[in-house]
Image (tube, rainbow, N blue to C red; front, side):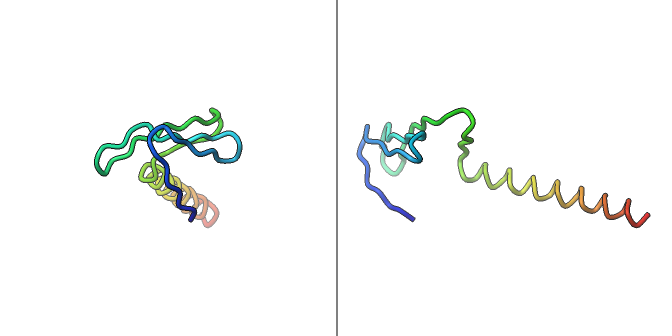
Length: 72
């Protein structure tokens, strides 16, 4: 993991097309602004994990249905 220090209004660039800017710092909370192309999905990690879990569950259900259909 790369750890960087940034101050308010400072930014970093990822892959030439994603820019993350520190907008505000209040106590232990940091507000970030993210500029990225529309085709680049940006999620909070907890939301991303929920999506991954839901996709895994959907895949498991589809696999079980396909297996039941195969076995008759």
